[in-house]
Length: 155
Image 1 (cartoon, one colour):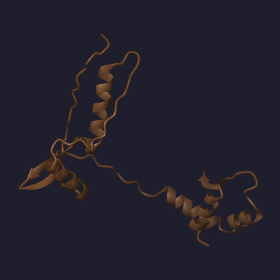
Image 2 (cartoon, rainbow, N blue to C red):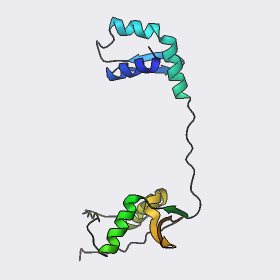
Image 3 (spheres, rainbow, N blue to C red):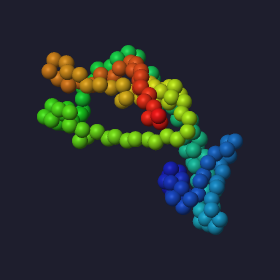
Image 4 (cartoon, rainbow, N blue to C red):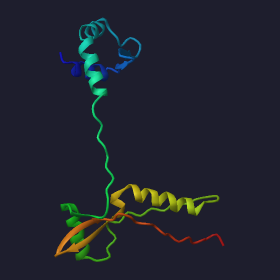
């Protein structure tokens, strides 16, 4: 039996097998570690330890920051939505709106700063559609600052 298969079977039974300080450890609900499971753990101890140790030392994927504006092709779903927008301009069928009611004092500057940080982190929120040589493209802007206005309805 492969170590990964055994680890998965143990996981399905609620038994968590892990490595701590170079030793194989196990956390299980009361009564879950039957004699059969203990024997399997003993028999495959070395391969389980090796599999879990290798898993922990897998190289991590580095997320690279995007530099500058990026020009990308649109997906088929985006093409469909752009076609529908041209067919019925201004139609809000595909818009999703929401409203929040806030009570108490709100630091408007902090709300704007938080929204701008979210926009900075997520390319999709800085993406716009442009036409280049008759073809729809999506352009990811390098920077976009929100500047919402505050309307006090409390008066």
